Amino acid sequence: MRAILILLVILAGGYGIALLWPGPEPVSHPWLDGRTVERAERIAHAGGLRRAPANTLAALEQALADGADVLEVDTQLTSDGVLVLMHDDTVDRTTNGTGLVAELTLEQVTRLNAAFGYEGEDPDRFIRHGITVPTLAESLAAHRDVRWIVEIKPDTEEAARVMCDTIREAGMESRALVGSFHDSAMAHFREFCPEVATGMASNEALSFYVMARLGLAKFHPTPAIAMQLPPRANGLEVIHPRLVAAAHARGIAVQVWTINDPGEMEALIARGVDGIITDRIDVMAAVQGE
Image (cartoon, rainbow, N blue to C red):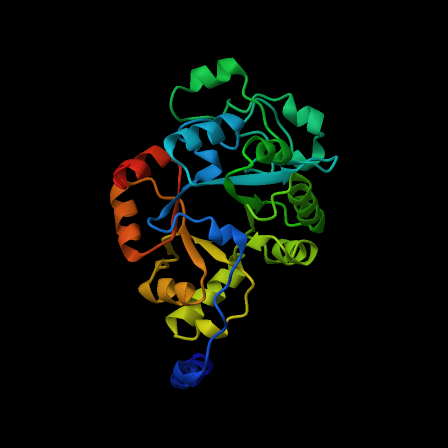
């Protein structure tokens, strides 16, 4: 405890120096240039999983019809090295199959019905239509004019490399922003694909939050252009005014997940967040009067 107190005193003393010390230039990237700046952006969580089965082409199409600005999806790597849209590391919860994605071939995964775990609107309709698990490559190709947030779920160097290759082959370097909870996967991706925008991994975001609350965020070393955060974590208010101000001073977009309540959307919009990741793009559009 004494060591923590000493550290806080040192940091508090550094706060006065920080006020005089020039910060880094605000970040820039083509991904940011395409933003809808006049309002908080509508980001479709897993393609908009309350309106259609998560991480499917049907969800992506529905989200865009509802007014999404950005499509957010999760990816897993098959045994033969192809990224597919899938949140879990197994296919058990969201399909009629079983097993780890990493132990299944692309052919095995794409034979599954991706609507079996769906609990949103009219599930029987999607199950009857046999919604399949798409690859990341075909998803990007289907919506080339849209901006994306694509998450690397496996904490592996191979997944990061394949993500880089897939984005480059699709010609989506300016339209894809890559995120991951895993600091190591993010580090690998940034090494492979320095030209592609990234968000902050878990420990990176945590340290930025702490430094923002202390007024020292200008010293935080990060190449990220965005951060995806929950509104609260471990009893703490994450989307604090100091965090939002510190991120904006660096040109970093603040995007909050996963918000479906209209009142909470309004509160976060009033706080100045840049985007809201939601299962209900249609609800957010209504909140914004569109």
